[in-house]
Structures are given as structure tokens and as C-alpha cells.
Length: 84
Image (cartoon, rainbow, N blue to C red; front, side, top):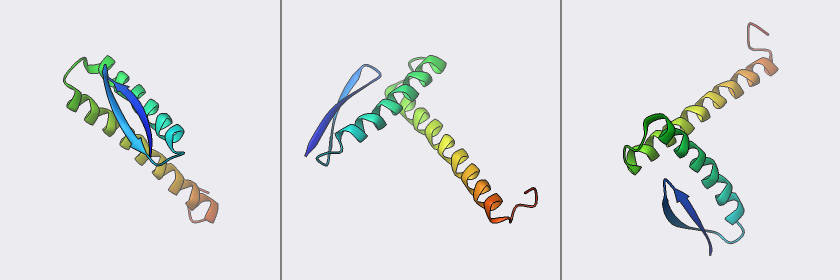
């Protein structure tokens, strides 16, 4: 079993993963860390839980935007978009 240490908002968390997945988990954790820092810069220290929820919601919002764009591109490539 693999393991990495992640520091978020000055707190270190040890996470386990399948062997060989350490690099992927580290990349995901780094992306989340950047989002957490951005939230802290915007709202200050309002507690870890609130900061992590706000960072997660920012990521989910981005994900939804990308899904919508992907669906639009699929419609355009199928010729079903009237603006195509």
C-alpha cells in the first residue's frame, strides 16, 4: 500500500493509496492545495472545514463548466447544434 503526506493549510495529512498511485495522488493533492490557498487568500482563515468545502466547491464548479463545454463540443461535432 502506497502512502503520501499532504500539507493543507499548515496541517499535514497522511493518505494511503494503491501501490504505484502515489504520483497521481500527489498531483491531485497539489491541485487541491493550490485551491485551498486561493480560498485562504480570498476569505482568510475561517476554519479548515469551511476552507476545504469552499475549495471543493470551486473544483466542482470548474468540473461542471468543463462537462458543459464537452457536451457542447460533442453536439457540434455531431451536427446537432443549430449554431454549427
